Length: 178
Image (cartoon, rainbow, N blue to C red; front, side, top):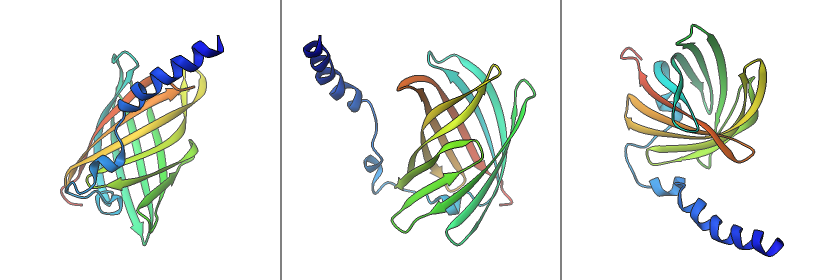
């Protein structure tokens, strides 16, 4: 049994790792994503939550306001879901000299940590997500792709115990007066 498990791991590991993108894949791409430039002023986002099979569970709109002082930023997010539920999250962000970014919020269990390369950001964190009266700690593998100076696409894979449980997709846009 132990030999079978080792053989299975040897076969599956390269397959699983070949399916994921690495942040270094985006070196030298343009325009360069700098969170302290994109996330400044007022923004709006539209998104959806999908289950692991791709079925849309919820749609939402997010109004955001962001500001930076030096290497520290605050991103206020006000969500309105298609069923009328409202949610607020305030991110506290930090830009590090080595190009990494970190972030915390009241419902972020494991702080977000990642970095940018070219037009992409990848960061990972654990979020406390309420589902049917219970709160689950869900791991997020979050990718942001800058399209131009005013628009960004965000895709996040959600996992629990290493298994995909869903995905979140957002279209973000800076408001014209920002």
